[in-house]
Image (cartoon, rainbow, N blue to C red; front, side):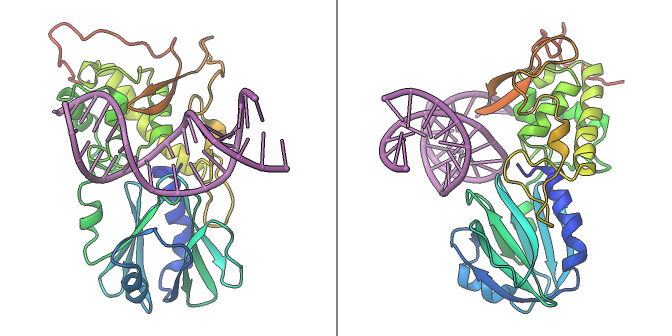
Length: 283
DNA sequence: ATAAGGCCCTGACCGC
DNA sequence: TGCGGTCAGGGCCTTA
């Protein structure tokens, strides 16, 4: 599943092949992946543009074009962007091809067709409501403490809320909570200062390690060179039902906020609200 | 603010 | 071999 580390990997690996390259043709092999504008306008608007910048925002990729417009891409669950030779025939699940000057193409591969592309004048119309970048300078311990203090919702759904923190998905939420030894259903405002401190560190460490390992290919995710990532090989709980934990417990799967959730019931225990509540004054 | 349900879509998997 | 049913899953939307 493409989450922050997978999108970051895609951006990093794609960048050298696309920066400064002109898009000479756009082919929509299967419709339904363009969110805006119409498919005809999308094709027309992209043709002839040069990619000036490529960056990640949350789980979105943003291609900044030479006319100021932005091509914004969300891979959702099964999308990948593959940098291929233009001679390579598109395989079954390629929905859109961006042909670049110089003989290469970007293949947008998306098995379940949940992924979307936008061509917009202002990228903020797509990514404007996203919350903090968890690997950015604004994601500090005190900011996280302040966020958690005023929310009663369970911690896992909060981590998945892109309007609060942008980029964490189901797998890395489970890994971060496990590493911080926090139960996924623990109410956010009941987290103790030491737990918040561990969570802040674990969010950054699981995401950084994910990037270092070029993302997780648990399902259909592929890197731009067509290869798989290795991050899932180090997952301790995500998709690891029955695996034994170093504490002697076993990873279980429950459903939290309609999401499959993996955790160790021995290490990650629910605890009651601290007397007086809201004492989230980390360190 | 919060929760729950639906929707999109298709491969994998199960039982028969 | 194949058929039908069920499930997973991110994000967004609607409804409570």
